[in-house]
Length: 211
Image 1 (cartoon, rainbow, N blue to C red):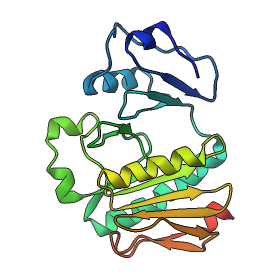
Image 2 (image 1 turned 45 degrees about the vertical axis):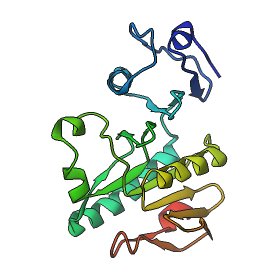
Image 3 (image 1 turned 30 degrees about the vertical axis):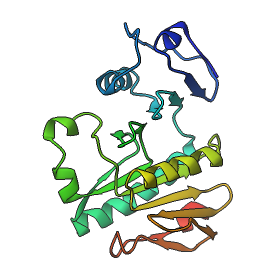
Image 4 (image 1 turned 90 degrees about the vertical axis):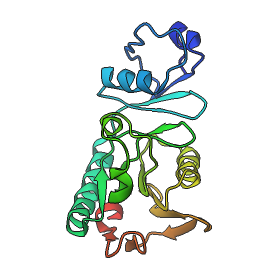
């Protein structure tokens, strides 16, 4: 964990994974970040994935490894084909930030929102981090990710309104499926996973993920 004087003045903790020296521009912030402050902070550091939990703790993640990036690409490509044909919602990539109802700022590896729900968000708020929880979220566990932390994040999505969440653990060849009012389903090396009933007709073939 790395803390800075600027971070202390803002009463926030700065966590950097992996722990490497980074130049972070906090600007003139001497107070906890509000939603706009956090958005512009992220814009100043576009090469990093930055999240903030509901308590104001900031986590900065380095770019993914090549293997994880390739897996994310395959997932996004397969899902984009389905989403475009389906037309009932809008999909988002891993660089998209959302403000959840509990105040946390999260960037899932992939997400999708029902179209009518997305269009209900005022246009000006859509240009920043939209104050909305996606209906469907996916997180892919990379080599540096803590499974426990990712599981907590998935629980947070469900608690804040997500209807379906997939945690894809490439290392252990497992998929954890999260749904409203249901126990977490753990699948061992599945050949495919279905998004129904939320994502009608979407089935993800796992051969490109687990080999």
